[in-house]
Length: 112
Length: 116
Image (cartoon, rainbow over all chains, first blue to last red; front, side, top):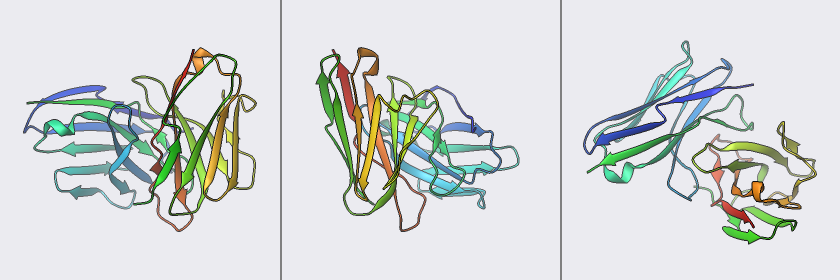
């Protein structure tokens, strides 16, 4: 089955700096890659996603890049703010309607 | 976006009792719902896939007789933890995807189960 790795497991940055989280996956047939933000005790919230036919997608301070050949994708957050502090999960889906396989998560702390 | 409502948000039960968790899609029909379990400081692990009108599909290592899933309608799936034990204490969360296309999954609020 699919195996998703995520690095780093924890990340601390100064407010205003950039943060990058990387995920690798094993199934080359996977074609949908969302990123979720989860605050303590709350549900995961989709923050950005990318499909396999696109190499990069950007939404204001958040961007995702995908390298299908190398089977990795990354989340980029620029101009970080304290409210960006949370746990971020990448996920991978092979086909529409199937479940997601989640990475182990990255705890991001933005220091004021 | 679509709304998925999960209840209860928090429950404490005695060891040996059963607990039912409901997951409802409020403004769309969900042909498929997924049930995840999340232990503290860990990721979401898929327990089972719930399909409306048919039996749920369980992941390896998840006891189907212990975690009963019912998906009787296009808007409701329930997870019943039977004969709960302290090691079942966890954060249970459902997600649903509508049948109108799109790949985004919408999550319920989650249920914090504590078995004492």
